[in-house]
Length: 278
Length: 265
Ligand SMILES: Nc1ncnc2c1ncn2[C@@H]1O[C@H](COP(=O)(O)OP(=O)(O)OP(=O)(O)O)[C@@H](O)[C@H]1O
Ligand SMILES: Nc1ncnc2c1ncn2[C@@H]1O[C@H](COP(=O)(O)OP(=O)(O)OP(=O)(O)O)[C@@H](O)[C@H]1O
Ligand SMILES: [Mg+2]
Ligand SMILES: [Mg+2]
Image (tube, rainbow over all chains, first blue to last red):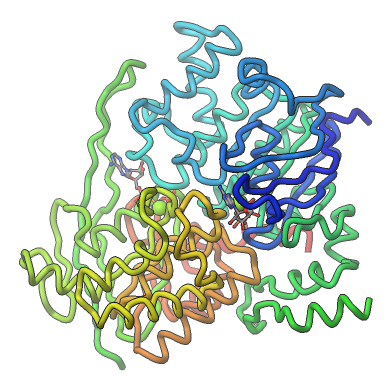
């Protein structure tokens, strides 16, 4: 199988507090045609890991370690070189759409910009492609004229999805891409991404809190806790035979659709004892 | 039977989408098409529905954060549109909102302590020390730390920002909170913690919630009643158990059967 991305010993700390390990010694490999889901605690470093692949970490943070895309080290690339990879070869759906959409440009214009920059599309061909992308994500084509703040939360998220797949990237990084979508639209989007993965043999890194989504789309699963990867495995291994106490505890919190199971957050005191015993 | 604390009658809201450079024509979007809801004191009313069906628009109209074309909203029997100036401001303390997009709703130049404490300051609730104490307690209850008061919004993760928005609304001890996708960015453990917190506060203070969510598992756990929206209209309304066990509308049936993970389970 073709390896698309290799991260080795990635560590991220604030420049002002180099001892605070926001991401601690993370290594992972993504392969063509595979979907890898990252699940884990809120604040465990999932988004920072994703952003560092794109070279988009905040200037207040510093990263160490190696990130290789198709065998080439990309941590040392300058902004211009990174920009030609971003969008064209690596697509990203950001966790908060408004942080990456430009509020003063229509969404049609923003999707078009990507297409012109990377594929050279113009005129009628451009308009056609924009319409096709919007239709694929379930947004009426006339909404190309909308500014981001004229769209609903889920529509904005879908505009981002359209932009990220516009150039059919080799690697798609999706950070909670369906959190604002109802289940029917979510199902449509997951199918779209899955079909793209199969047709283009794309590698997908998919960050989510929703174990239902994991069950539907993951091949492999990575579990993060306090900046570290605590467990990796196939979907079947993680969902039905989790090994690490955190994974077990997290799975025990998944709510049921019948409302019978009691809501109960993780008891971290228990987690510590269990870890010591293991 | 408890009293109705917030009532919306026949709300209509239409947006006009201008024509643009791509030559697509002008269009009218009916985001709310004759929507009426009644929220009973001390209960939770969930609003579910397709992306773009008008849920966030309803949320903003309920709290007078956005004008609507026609209809009215009564809070404890008072027409909110008829309140102005100080009256409206003092009413606002009782009506809080948790916004769908946490990042866009937090002022990037304010520290978290200031953001969460701003309402207490504006409404002059308690001494400075009491305000600080309340902010600290509430941050801890949503799983953040006292030290976080000194940080800015961009220094947090998505789920942490969402919890800041929740703390900001709850610290005022309001009567009604409209929560727009309040737990969508939280891992299932923190999500359970926040849902339990909302329930505890409901018991302690007889709080009422309008709870917008696309996650039907979460809704099942938190709501008493549920309304289902589709294309600006309410298509189904009932007690949560009834709607889950015997959905009347095809759209509701589709929603319930599309809960992810079911096909693998
Ligand atoms: N600019 C920054 N300065 C300092 N700390 C930061 C900064 N950005 C993020 N952090 C911290 O780094 C940790 C990891 O953040 P990250 O956004 O990767 O979490 P996450 O796993 O994506 O969480 P969530 O599920 O809530 O989105 C968090 O504790 C966060 O507070
Ligand atoms: N300012 C605006 N101008 C034009 N159209 C708007 C504006 N705000 C919202 N809309 C449109 O009104 C409809 C309802 O939007 P709303 O945000 O209420 O939906 P929602 O149910 O909250 O969706 P989501 O689940 O995706 O957040 C959508 O089609 C949206 O594009
Ligand atoms: Mg994140
Ligand atoms: Mg919304």
